[in-house]
Length: 385
Image (cartoon, rainbow, N blue to C red; front, side, top):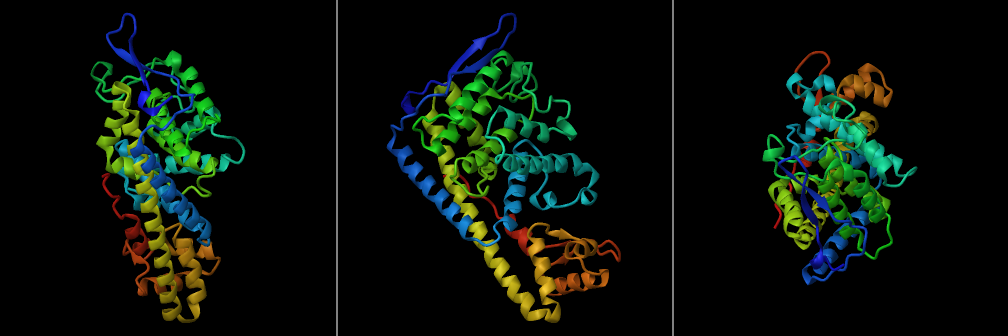
């Protein structure tokens, strides 16, 4: 099928109810690119993704920095759903979160758990209904979603937007069609149709969001599928591309372009938007990774030049800080397996050279932040052009 000839599906009435649900067509077939603009954008997106992948292979200890990408993804994806947690909060322990922020914080932490668990499970099982349900089960295992059938497809009608089904912005397919539609999506996911992989995951993401197979958490699951697909199909060797910052920055366009596919069959416009998102996200990730590496190099020199005979231990702590940028003296003692006195001296050294900043001003149980790194991670994402 040519992309310009795509038919998304149709709206259908349900007997005795005053609303129409959308029933999408099957996607398990070939897609032929018949747009010069799409071909040009595909080449740009593929090149940037390749550059990101090459960088991931070259960077020593790349796993040190992956958590920052995962935490940022969890924060941005949850923001799309309305949470207010910032990336710095995602690194904090629950005891450091204000009571009124804990529900949002928990949602982000469960998202982080779901991503890490799914990536690890790729070694055991492919992306499948089983894995999708497991991701959902983890996402909704606690907090606000625990009563929304974690790990199970819905058995009732849901809707998107509006206070009720009669004022909804969009009504996904009736629940009787969910298993069949997800089966078709899974078949397409593993098919050998000659479709470029980035185009394929763009179509999969659209279709998953349209099916909306769960009572809650569909957007988060759909966004997690993107890096999983890229890793499982060897476009990335490490999970470093997460698109939620792009979707959050361009939230209105994101929803509008999904809806235009359903209503007007505008698949091309969605594909161009998604591929531009891949390009910008890869470019942003490369930029952040370069800045993190420069920061690490500069701080290593600072520690070696200014902390005397404790430099080795201080450098060991610096490595830890890229994964846990909020830390207490007790954490340092446990992580480096040193005495409490030595841990305090290490922290004091890093405060003195302005790598750590004390937040609590308490004599005991003081909390310190790796501010240079946290400030870098908050760099704004560019607006879609």
